[in-house]
Image 1 (spheres, rainbow, N blue to C red):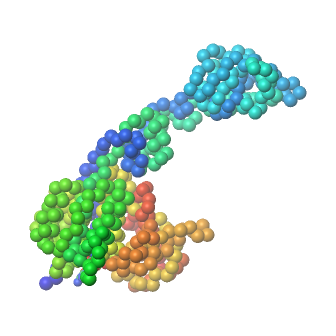
Image 2: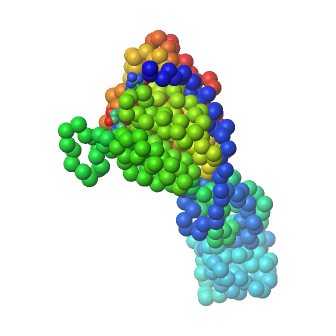
Image 3: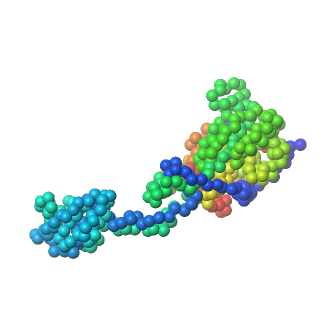
Amino acid sequence: MVEKRTPVPVGEAVHRLSTQNVSGKTELIPLEQSFGRILAEDIYASHDVPAFDRSPYDGFAVRAADTQNASQDEPVRFKVVGEIGAGSLFTGEVKPLQAVRIMTGAPIPAGCDAVVMLELTKEISRDEIEIKRAFPQGANISRQGEDTKKGTVLVRRGMTINPGAVALLATFGYRHVKVAVKPLIGILATGSELVDVDEPLTPGKIRNSNAYMLIAQIERAGGKAVYFGKLDDEFEACLKAVKQALTEVDFLVISGGVSVGDYDYVPAILQEIKASVLFNKVGMRPGSVTTAATVGEKLIFGLSGNPSACYVGFELFVRPMIRKALLADKLHLRKVQAVLGTDFPKPNPFMRFVRARLSHQAEKLVAAPSGKDKSGIVSSLGETDCFIVLPSGTRGYEKGMVVDVLLLEDDEGSEWPWNDIVRSYK
Ligand SMILES: Nc1nc2c(c(=O)[nH]1)N[C@H]1C(S)=C(S)[C@@H](COP(=O)(O)OP(=O)(O)OC[C@H]3O[C@@H](n4cnc5c(N)ncnc54)[C@H](O)[C@@H]3O)O[C@H]1N2
Ligand code: MOO
Ligand SMILES: [Mg+2]
């Protein structure tokens, strides 16, 4: 008798997973390797920026009061008493009608409270200049702390380090950065029909695309992939491989063999290793057979062998757990609203995740289905950068309807996208 499985709603399945204990670890890495990693501590400004009043222009530092009577007809003459470039200090005190030649980035000399750009001065001799207009106090001075004040939190823990964050880390002297350790995610591809990417196709065989797709998905989510190879559909060999893989990784993703077929061994393997199954059927298309289980602290995901179902199952269920291990505060795919780009006439007994591509058209965000939608399809995945979420119902959807969309190429995320999904029926 074929095992009867009870589908759980997508939100419930994600909830069962995301409430599991996953202990994230942190490590210190060199700043130049930190791009794309997740920050494990808040970054504070450890000093004012700029740390001193400085000149934003090449010019002359003067006392603003001395310029007050300057005009085209009656220019005021200044004696140039020194010259400083960025990185140098003028050590004296500037007296009335004196000026210091100053370059962009250099500290304002004591006594000065304005900078006059080179272009607005006239050189009379090597050490004399004329100024032909008045400058107010503070003119052309970048004030200490105007960029940021000491103690300000600039980047929060949980944020993905982008090039701007790298600039801040460097500004405040972070030679090493505390980041979340990438969780190690193992991949096992099952299927006697699989040949590897460099092998010729023979009758009845297909190339193993899921394993390589999963490596890329794991890396996009911020994890570290370990590919253990492909296995024929043989119970003992698969069991042994699963047991071994579990000793080496944080989570294990198995592709294929999760359904009810004669050679679908994942359910029996989970039973054999006494895993607690969190769910083995989800009310969704594609990927309804997606299975998740725990053994001790480890998570095992059984993703459909069908490429589109495997892809969707990964993004909805594995990705948030990778984000949890990475200490991210928003675990789930970011949800936004967009307009449906084409009709989608097929009614859905289950919530459907349509692989799609986003674009801006006439100031609207448009989500266009990438193409063929069956769960065994691989061709539409290349164009996919989001999922259109179509709740279950008896009617199809029409071009122009507002729909919820989950973004795949985003690292901000959503706290919980599963409430209030737009129903979309007219
Ligand atoms: N009687 C039933 N049959 C099926 C059901 C069901 O409920 N009752 N569910 C269907 C659904 S839905 C899906 S999805 C698939 C899930 O299949 P499995 O996870 O058991 O995967 P396999 O049987 O191993 O393979 C399915 C399909 O995918 C191809 N495949 C497998 N591995 C890879 C890979 N690494 N790269 C590319 N393609 C792969 C495989 O050749 C099959 O065509 O079950 C339905 N059946
Ligand atoms: O689980 Mo299947 O992917 O719904 O087609
Ligand atoms: Mg099968």
